[in-house]
Length: 168
Length: 258
Figure 1 (cartoon, chains in turn blue, green):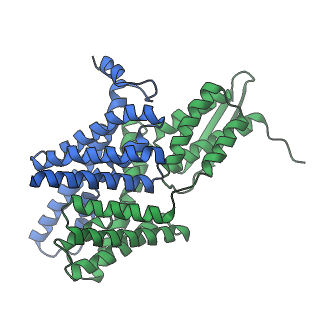
Figure 2 (tube, chains in turn orange, green):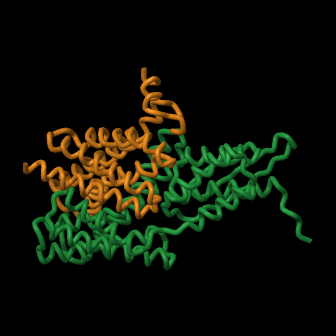
Figure 3 (cartoon, rainbow over the protein chains, first blue to last red):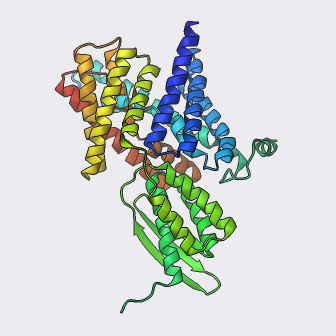
């Protein structure tokens, strides 16, 4: 029950975060709800994976792939390029936290005095920096996966059925 | 005596304007090329372009009359606006299928350009809610979320004001990050909530350059390496500005690490 409540809370707040960024990016109001919902479901995929011990990079890849595939049929419905709602949906997954942990580590390196402190900071810089780059990479691969496997540049005329056919 | 603008010159100007609008609004390079090709095919020209972060060079050719024209356009600093991307994408299909004239395309571009943003107070509140959402996701309690809300609100307000005063874009980010983390530092100082340092960590997340960083990777995957690298450098500069703001506030309050 505790975990269910926890997940529901994260589901809702991921959706709110996605919709909030949608408003900041001036997403048309007809796509705003889809963006929020997509973000919420992305959170629902990512957090259980992390809680059950999956690496955050893999969890982000799975959630972003989900967003990428669902945004194709959604794009047909509202006649909008898919990334208009897929980008707000994945913004909550952008590793901003790791990014500035890395930069803060770099700043702290300039004032570090002892060797052990230096080593700790170096570890933190590399660890957080690499995490940031790999998460970013997996998110952008995941989101553009439908395009990459269908070898097309536009989702117009692209349906899930056709995608299946292409994969086979 | 003023010369009349020729047809090809008008089309080139319009296509440049469309590409520049897409670049400013935060479209990736492949998307810009797609829209450009659709619009130029609708107007009856062949277009080739070199698209970079701050300038576009474009040659359009009229193969029937054997005419061609090259133009260059500078691009001002970017501001993400998905309404324009969405609108231009729809318009490009309509133009291709219904064979729009130059006048029709120009009218649509002008209409899209004048479309409003969401009201400022709505942007402020929803982004602040997103900030407290991040705080919840990382495990903060209600008091932490409240502090993150106030800090994000202040930070975004200051950043918007700085943008209005036409400061350098990275300075705008620095000022936003600085003011957000000053507000959040109070929660660490007075130990508000369960994990006060979490409010500090999430108060600056609204500034994270998600669109440049994602576009940087999609551009790189698509083979537009230069744009990918440029966007990554731009994103890194923003992250640096955020961290600098956070670091300054922490120095001011004499907090060691987040």
